[in-house]
Length: 293
Image (tube, rainbow, N blue to C red; front, side, top):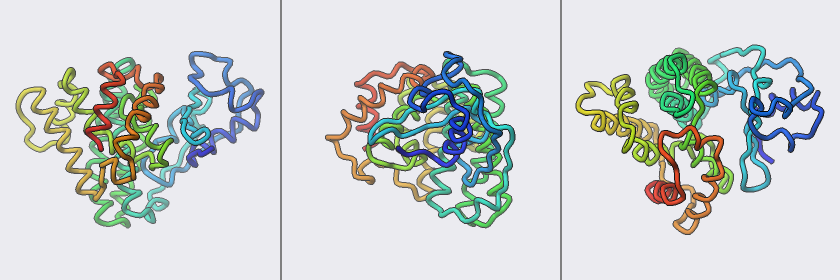
């Protein structure tokens, strides 16, 4: 079993007073209020990366066994408080800065385009997050000791966390999870690997929202919704390249023969796929992984 640090803290606080084992907690608690009875210990979070936004979300993700990621999702996991200290992130290596920063941007992008719970509050949070992260990430990559850049990234990641806590993430995360579970790829990198292909897939049927994000981040964006959506996708892929991140699946040892199993795993992420702008089929997932290869 593998768990991120933030999730460990959340689950320790919960399990200390739990009335049942962790194996019975997986799922969405606000659907079944009896999933995590018993309360928890006081919980304060101090993030040391600018990525997950976990300090403001009700989610803890666990890799179970060798191949499956499951989530405990319940309002009880909201922390009592959080401290954002950029000095705690200045020692991050460049590749970790890049992976976590792009992960936070994905949170904001997917919150802004979430199908079921998109709302004006989450939209505003996502826009603020993207503005801060798009500015802070390149500066932090250039100078890891830049406290202002690190602070912008931490605040952006937190705002993105608040955004997707209200308007949940979708297909990028759904297709990233099997990559992480099966091949132990860091979560931020696995999100980056499928980001461009998923955005192109969604933009075919819902370009307007991505066009709005182009207006936010792309200098002199212009044209139709589809054209501006393409400009936004190009922007994200160029940012990935500027951060020296190789998004190809083959770069982490994944081959064409692995793609069917990845597609099967992605379709099991129904909690996430229900939020996607466009229905995800096995064939579509396989095509996205093939494009990402």
